[in-house]
Amino acid sequence: MPPTSATTGSRPRRGEGQWALGYREPLNKNEENKKNDDGLNVQRRIIDIYSKAGFDSIDPADLRGRFRWLGLYTQRAPGIDGGKTAVLEPEELDDRYFMLRVRIDGGQLSVAQLRAIAEISSTYARDTADVTDRQNVQLHWIRVEDVPAIWERLEAVGLSTMEACGDTPRVILGCPLAGIDENEIVDATPQIREIYDTYIGSPLFSNLPRKFKTSVSGCSAYCTNHEINDVAFAGVIGPDGTPGFDLFVGGGLSTNPMFAQRLGSFVRPDQVTEVWAGVTAIFRDYGYRRLRHRARIKFLIKDWGAAKFREVLEKEYLGYALPDGPEVELRPDLQRDHIGVHRQRDGRNYVGFAPRVGRVSGAVLARIADIAEEHGSDRIRTTADQKLVLLDIADDRVDSVVAALEAEDLQVRPSVFRRQTMACTGIEYCKLAIVETKARGADLIDELERRLPDFPEPVTINLNGCPNSCARIQVADIGLKGQLVTDSQGRQVEGFQVHLGGGMGLNASFGRKVRGLKTTAEELPDYVERVLRRFLDQRAADESFAA
Ligand code: SF4
Image (cartoon, rainbow, N blue to C red; front, side, top):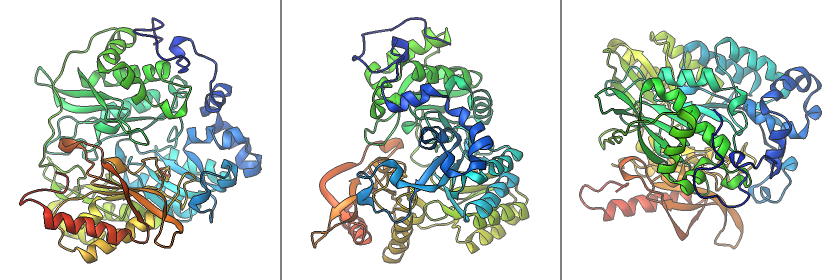
């Protein structure tokens, strides 16, 4: 689907590196690496060479670049504090072990698949496992020697790490309740499957300007956050009364947060894969490749606007016009996280539960697989909030399943703090991190539960280890961005810049970053407690924290 004209509007700024405008020469090192060799080709070298000859045999361009195309990042070498993150060379931060991201498109797992991940964690990953806010599971301490065996184990159950990282179409988010929710607008599982089968691992889209995040969901609570994905298909009832999708492009957080723009078009379920490919191809062809920090699709649509983007999509890529469609209807009564026990439309129940900040382990995942099986379920789901859901639980097994999960400290009726606090990977493993996040997030939950046991309102508290936004700080009620701060004795210590009042859905806005609003990590629980107590003292009668 090549573009048919060199441009469709005013000429963009010189040298943005857009392929469609003739800029084919790589303009930075990342682009050069991608031109030198397709990231997908590293899979063969890992199997044939690196896994046999060991870490020291790995070509640096593969190690710090193409390995990502297969879901592998070197993890941070232990003992390097956050002050050194920006000043050391990348190789000085590299450990000889890897983080491995298993993509779980739509968040859909069977018992056998969850067991496979659990076994890999126990056998090869020192029992580590984190459920991410993009429905993946990440493992740590992976040796390159073990990667082929891990891939074989994953492949045997239909899972993979293909394009889990890198400048590629990453995991496709989907509602964990797809196909079973009473309120669902449309089940997007076939569309997620079709995009995955057709395009993931295809050289057509293995060299995008940057990462590319997709959500396809018919959830009436809009749980996969269409506002902050590069491309999102969000369920609506179309003009003719049949279900389909409202199309959004260009959402993303990180250092230049932008909400996705609505194109205003209605996409029928049978058109989703083709429209997805069209949007992805526009990104590939017109996306900015000169500067990495301007390479996400949000910068292109910000410059073009939604109307021009839609015109290019329809005229150059689809060859037909999409009809105008209705806008998503956001409902204030539906929380997006699917926690708790709720009725499915077939009369059985789903049970959503919360580990602390997504951190589990191989042993815990194995136990969840056992609990599912013992209670007649073969369907486990991950959510976009670092949580999990068991489907298909009969009425007379609900109490037993809740008791079994809670015995593992997997809370089905969690406190507001356990339910809505997320943390990114942080300094424990991430080379970009400045501060520790996972343990701090877990401690913060425990402290707030102890200090404010009856806090009455939902409040999201998200912790990031650096200015990137893997844990969505800009759309949290209280967003905590890791950085070094000066403590009362004048020392540089780990701490957080505070963003207040962010949200999605009906209250979509980015949190306000107030100058000087910082806390040391040590004082974090005191700081958050003060903010929450002040809210309780000063709020109007029915005011929520997000209002
Ligand atoms: Fe790493 Fe920063 Fe992302 Fe946290 S937000 S996982 S520290 S890159």
